Amino acid sequence: MIPLPSPEAPVSDILYVIPCPQCGTRISLLETNLVEIIRNRRVSTTGEPLLTFVCQQCKNCFRWDFRRRKAAGLFPEPPQNTAHPVVFSTVAECENGDCAAQVEVIAIRPPGTTREQIDAERPSWRADDIYCARGDRIICPI
Ligand SMILES: [Zn+2]
Ligand SMILES: [Zn+2]
Image (cartoon, rainbow, N blue to C red):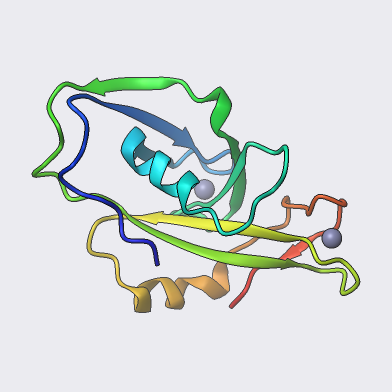
């Protein structure tokens, strides 16, 4: 679990809205949170500016290219009194036992979500469309 920084947010923060390609449920992410996620990446997928998120609604994993992000709006005030979302990160392994590739899977959940709640939903995560750098399927850790 990666704790996100709170009040040291910049004067204005950019909001990104990332829709799940499967069900359309959107993840709202502030630039501050995104920077922190990228800084704390546990697997460096060389040359791939992709983050793998788990949808809160349908539990489908999908990839998002953060270099192509578009701002959905601006927060003129630092969101000091706004509770930040909780970011859980876990590392999925490749289905092919001979392949050492790993993919970091990131779940962004409402403020206050606990580790236990994440563990409870983990068995329902689906990564059917996620492949490792060599093109093998990955297995979501339970
Ligand atoms: Zn979804
Ligand atoms: Zn592989």
